[in-house]
Length: 158
Ligand code: RBF
Image 1 (tube, rainbow, N blue to C red):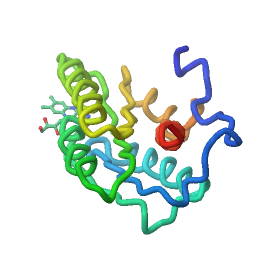
Image 2: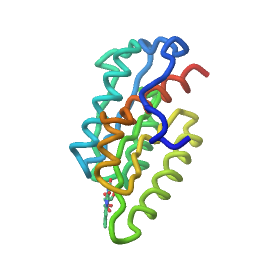
Image 3: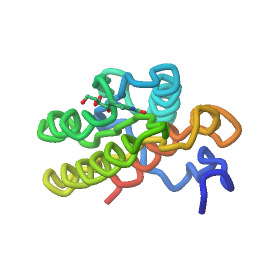
């Protein structure tokens, strides 16, 4: 379902495990920082809401989304981290940069996830314009950061 047809922040919280014993890495791309900060707040607040302890949420930044896979690899390789949440915003421009970045990030993150046997969540908003990104970072289509945190907690219940 297209995210425009669904408020991304709606989910059944009863199904999620208590995250109090879990340790999370949050990696936030600084490109489009105002929006990635909003995604980060959504993810952070959701982890806390589900029991995660502030000292068990390790926030790091990378310059842009393209660097998310390496950041994820640094954290996922650590015994101290159970799940990694990667947040970025890639907006289409006049050139095909978004295609190259999005494909590299999607492939890079799943590779890290499977290599380290840990959830590495793709919380990258990939949109045609700025407004679509704002709509998904606390706007009319919810907050993709919330959904990313929910996905991480869900996967930790395996
Ligand atoms: N990073 C993002 O996270 N979102 C973007 O929309 C974005 N657009 C970019 C457009 C161009 C033309 C370039 C060269 C980079 C862009 N980046 C973007 C940064 C990219 O993810 C990475 O940080 C840099 O290319 C350095 O490796």
